[in-house]
Image 1 (cartoon, rainbow over the protein chains, first blue to last red):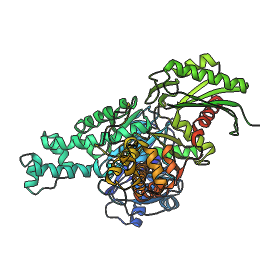
Image 2 (cartoon, chains in turn purple, red):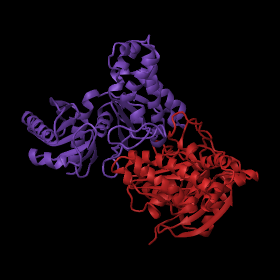
Image 3 (tube, rainbow over the protein chains, first blue to last red):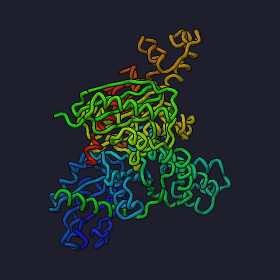
Image 4 (cartoon, each protein chain N blue to C red):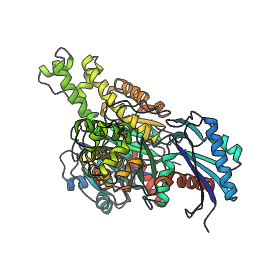
Length: 319
Length: 319
């Protein structure tokens, strides 16, 4: 007995991953399409087509879960605002549901990712989980008392948008905040600090990239650090320290069983995570200073797996 | 029908308030004792005596709730660590329960305060509530999905211990953190900033206090601000701004229905709260930027009322 089949779709700024999942986490079908540069209508059309293809492959699916990098009105299935998708106050659930003829549930991509890690990944068995996904920005997901916590309408758990510097730089995209972790401890910050380090250390690998006029972004800094460049390692450690300072606050707030870090910057592995762990240990109150900080396990599939799992949970709860 | 009677005891660093409450929030009995300078044993003895007196006055009480300014192991009833009380890993519940012969429940003072405001005060009817109590330090309480959120063992919701300045000053008491709201946005910070303002504005009321060698603490700054002193008003507004920046992060994390501010600094009223509200509106993401920020309503009784209410809820849930 593997429970009902559900479709999960993880729509990002560059690609969409769609899969059919059973309750044992077996992936019965999978597809991947590019989403970059699409308009709102084209994206809705893409979702509808890909979901239809998934149903053709697995006819007995009962519900669809969509994970989007947006603030979401969960109850009403509305995408409120996004940085990397052309969605502003769009009734995505209604539009997709009408065309696919299955119950559709909409959630933030980081919320479905934490659900996936909670059910099948790095946070299995934990009752209280904090997860941050550190890429271009910082996404956040919370499992509290065993359930995904979304806030009053579903727009909460924006864990990247907390203050690290009271009068720090303006935040990214549509966020009006200042000195947020999203700005100071993300992959974008990794690139920005990498460029500073390149200027200060012309003999380093980073300095070489600068001299050649090559782009120094988070990926380049991570690659240089993994290759042993001391300047790049220093930058990765500083971003890890800032991530850790952010997590130490979450430890004091949530007293979670575990804190999970995912996203592109985790390519640096323990070069990033060890400084983060040290900061939590050094800064958090007892007993929260002993909260484990672990790497996400499900990688790029977390969104799809979580979206399908969310759809199954909502479908079963609503009857 | 007013439900079972329970005893609530709010033990602070200087006094203890004990009351007997019914489920309609009627206070049937009340007593107040000093607690300053007591040893661990003397404090336990004080609690036992005051609870016994309350039972004499209202014999049909069924349970006792204690609110303490400590990190708490809720399940086991242990006071783990406190700044203003001589409690370190003390099994307070067991010790009191043995001597009073009633079920005893132990919780953090800010957790019982938010419960009281949720049931009877400024957060009535709200499903998700963030409360901070700003005095010498900053206490925190959370109601999430209608229930007090305490973290995995009961030590969470330490909302004053979040970072506002990545490399800011060391935190107070037993907290090993840096740049916390507790240090930068508390009543203690109000006094510290007031002393700076006094030096910079010798003609102000604050400057006059300094010239006379009088103490400039949070209370003095608040009084000067309420009296119209511009220098003091600037200090109160700056602390309000920092409180608001902290709350803007909580708005993004929790998407609460309401955020409640209590504690000694609220004597400044809207002089403090208006700058805090402006900061939430300016810094938080949509729709969290519209989260109401309101003053606590139950004042010094919140702890006792919340402790008694917590005991009633736990007594009824555990059968």
